[in-house]
Length: 168
Image (cartoon, rainbow, N blue to C red; front, side, top):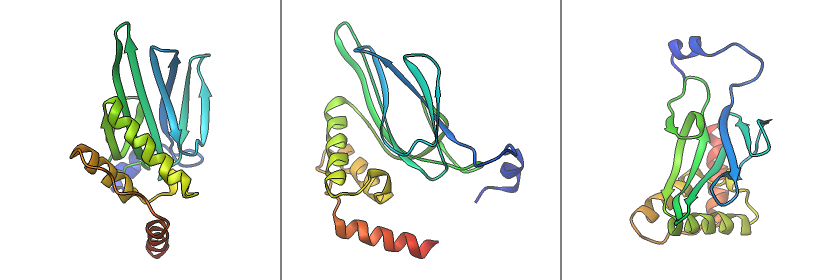
């Protein structure tokens, strides 16, 4: 729950404040894209750059990749929950104002394993943004410890949905 001071600092406008993500696509140089998540708003800046906005509590995956003449110099994936006005947030380059980090992985082999974990959730017929946030945290922790992440199951998803209903 936001503090009274934080709530006072929130702009009074129609609708909730959005979390903005800057996307870039310079083929084989800099690529920043959304792997999953429901975009609420989009602003096209030019043919290579755009900004997308996510509503509070939306979960999305943001992939950042950069290369030079010698090959890949940066590859990262962040799975983030967009925060509301006044909520605590971690800063992430390219995300304004930041968000709750569920997963933060760097290095192409590890990023590929996260992408495979996302594919596994989709293979169950579950939208990755609707998966239990704890799943993405355990994927992060297991990969950080150089272990294999536990697969997401329909039983785990059902338990998450029931728990989420009770928290409403």
